[in-house]
Length: 418
Length: 88
Image 1 (spheres, each protein chain N blue to C red):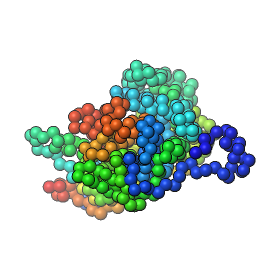
Image 2: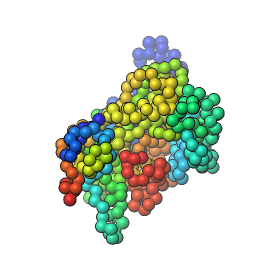
Image 3: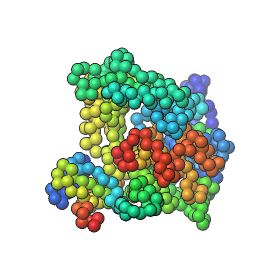
């Protein structure tokens, strides 16, 4: 596989940029593999890449029921941050942040990682206190964090509502300068290309319809392209984990919910950071094309439909205008939905399962995109060694039985309230 | 917007209702000593891609708890009944 470089662009320019090779092969499945990763989203592709890169396991297939980039990796709002409070989350997401910082180089693919900084506004003295707690935890873990007062926030993001009539006046904010965004499609394509470069077969339009068992052990999958044998199987199908889990006989603490995202018509540069509203569920960044990309709450009832309802559009727009009255006249260009695995504590599940040969990676709730590299790294380790990577020790399925939940939001066990 | 045919109030938009999730969940007996039963009650949910029996409460209406049978892939509602009768 030819490396991407400035020289390659120059060389290909001589032939009109018409002779680039495919970024990855259109593979058809072999009869069997050492490892099959089900799900060709960001997490599945990253897992396959790190299986090859870190563990030398190259006889690997990624099975994707649709096309690469068509699922949640292409449906998120691309925010990357590591401002988590709870032990287990804090270290995992910071490890992910460090992988993001080297990703374009590691994959030889420009994922357009832009560390523009993220701030969450505080709307009471108490909220600012709780943010200080969070910032202290982050700093004790070697993560950058700043607490900003109202005037500092105003200097940074003057377009927010600082008027006397603001429904929830801004008291300050927590700021992480290394947070930012990345081009989500490039992440999928970059991992797919890099995994393919290591010999991984990426099979698109191949839906897994069942598992093949030998006694208690799962030894392969039935797919729309026939039966494929496997030494080990990794499940990375967040959104549909319950469906495939049920086929493997697992009853899981997961509900599927739809989360919408929105983009406005393109504007001149306005939002230089990622801004999250501390008084409601709304967060926004501006794409390179100029559109404001934002998201809000779940629709609130179990759904596998990749589209949302209009009630939430209105709620999110209300929150947007409460924080940024200046965008009240901006037109919405598109909105779309992705199906989330919602867990009862809003934290993910990555672990070996009670079924021999089957490993689980799911339950990403709102937070899957930022976790992509660390999730792939740690899941690959878990599959290769059969033991959870230390960074995901807190993400076991048994935490619900033992009462060691990681309830970052403190929302209790109703998945749709997270 | 879902349109739920409330057996008491007639067809109403779903934002008049509060969602209550999987209707198959049953609270164990108060003195049930098995932690596995309580784990399943608190955390494990049926999450089918297809027909789903779920609870909704008509909070801005008759305040009755309902069992709604809805397809989670296309949101087509096939039945709505009072929870007090269909879960009895």
